[in-house]
Image 1 (cartoon, one colour):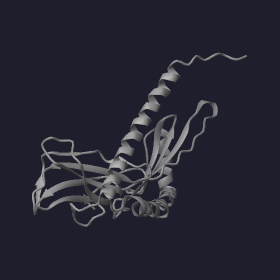
Image 2 (image 1 turned 180 degrees about the horizontal axis):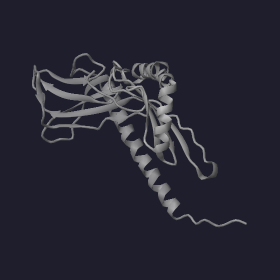
Image 3 (image 1 turned 180 degrees about the vertical axis):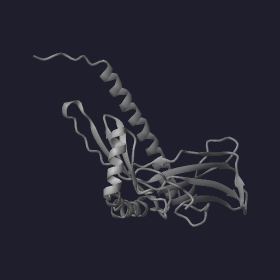
Length: 248
């Protein structure tokens, strides 16, 4: 894999607050690659916010950090409790980690890409092209404009990757230009769902109906963001001016 991960897969706290005492048990599954060769199970024991004992599957031993913890760790290792703890590595950590990679980290959805022309507001160029990538997962995409196969870097603007609210994302890149007869203009898209970059050519004969769909969709997105921001500002103003009256 080209990406690496290191995080706690499972955290299970057990709390007790009797007579001011606080006891906490935390179980973690750690790994940093898809082959799970470095898979590790850790069991932490914490009393009054002080970690006094820990089990680590890599060494298959309990380790003590306080006088009480050292005594308990030695006893657990002698009695075989460490071997019992080690079973959690394959019984709990491995199947959960495999499912996490399969269902989430390795799950990809290819973007739906359209390259259309819209009316340009520039006095320098007659045309504005928009390359739109919709409904892709995960985030992390690159759009590049090509003119006769060569990358275009000037007169190019782009939105941020926008989250749809349903796990998927979208992004829009714009190119202002004056097209020349016979030239080829395309948008190159790079995403983890593709085995290699894909090229999407601009078709000058695209219908006005399809062109208007992109304009309406982009305008609706911007309008929605403006209305959401206005609602937040209005709510904050109303909350600031509210007076609380005590009730009997």
